[in-house]
Structure formats: C-alpha cells, structure tokens
Length: 232
Image (cartoon, rainbow, N blue to C red; front, side, top):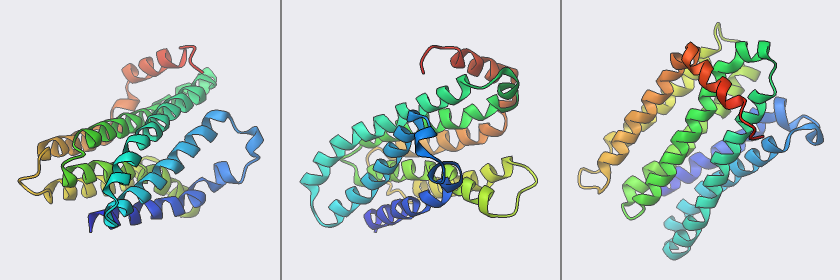
C-alpha cells in the first residue's frame, strides 16, 4: 500500500502545482521571471515525478530499475535544494532595506524546508535497504511540499484569514499529524526506525519554530548577513 500511496500523493501535489503557482508564476510573462525561479520550479516538478515513478517501479517489481533511478534522483534532490537556497538569496538580496525589514522574517521557511528536505533525502538514501524507513523519508519530502502548495491555494482562492501565520498553522498541522502517524506505524523491528522518529520530531519542531525564530533580531541579523554575500 505504501508505494501506491506515495505515488498517489505525489501525483496529487503535481496536479495542484499549476493552481497554486498560477497567480505568481504560470500566468506571468516567463521571460520576465528570473532564472532561479524557473530552475527551482523545474527541479521541484522533477522531484514529484521521481516520487511518482519510484514507488510504481517497486509496485511492479522493477527493483533494479528502482535502484538505478534512485541514484540518479539524488542529483534531482540536490538541484532542488541548491536552487531553492539560491532563489531565496536572490529574492532577499534584491529587497530594499525597508522591504527587508518587513519581510526578512519569511526567509526562515524556505531555508528550513530546504534543510529538512536535504536531511530526509540523505537519511532516506542511507536507509534505502530498510523499506519501511526509506519509504517514510521519501514521503516526508513530499509532505514538506504541502505548505508551498496548499498555503498558496488557500491564500489566493479562499476567503482571507485574519493572520498570514494561520496559513502555516493549517499546513504545518497537517504535516505534523502525517509525520506522527508515519512514525507511530513503523514496525518495531524496522532497521533505522529511531532515525525516522527523531527526524519527525526534529522536522515538526523546526516548523513550529517558524512562529518564534523569524521574529527575533538575531534571525534578521543572520539573514541580513546572508543577503549581503555575493552569491546570486
């Protein structure tokens, strides 16, 4: 059931992507959009395709092809993480000081998600021979994409919420409940079980800190230092 569930979930996210990104990306003149956005969108789409294809290969018993594709998919994951960090730097480094003062806090989320995504991929590859653990790390990478999709859909197509933080409150709750369920249903004998449990705790804690850390002077100081680096 797990392979089909992962493929179905990833396919649903892929279908929702045009709706979520239509107002700010697909409806725009692509030639006027920076290359970092295009590259990140490409790698994000490719990763969802990976999460659709890989479980289906397992379901059909094509394990050798699955392993070969898994090694290649690490390049896609690496590209998604790096392009996301570069895009974040590009956007925040181009802000005026006044805009940065208002919006610098929001750099926390893309940086945190990139870090959690990278950790899930590395640990998923590390425990690739423990199927239940490996599958949970892979589906966790898809869960992390739930916020940028669902939060945008709620923001653009539903009545506005009293506070922008409530959009993350909804999506983070969904992610946390899903990860708690995945951790609780892991077989006791599964190798690497504790690694996923600890990852889930760390991921949920990191997302919860979104409501605290970004609004501190220390965080803005870190982001201000990062935006001044000559990266993009």
